Amino acid sequence: MKDVKIESPEFKRIMKNLHLENLSLNEGLQEKVLETVNADKPITPAVIKDLLSRG
Image (cartoon, rainbow, N blue to C red; front, side, top):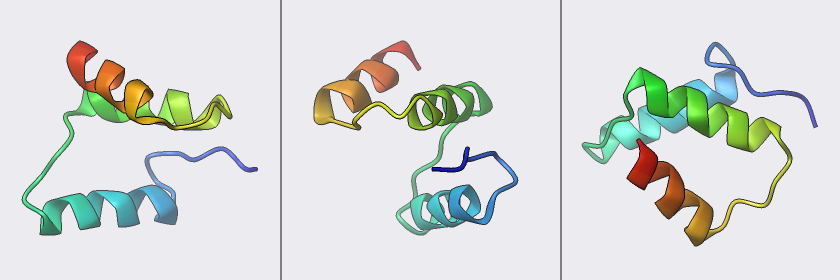
């Protein structure tokens, strides 16, 4: 799987969808999300909660 970057269409689509739901991610959290996704680790509710708590 190719690495996802902030400039990638996939990430822009995610950010647009979050915006439509009146949600946003600060730049630091965006970087942490990208690191997690690009590490090829499974994205679980526990991983999401951990990212948000450290956000």
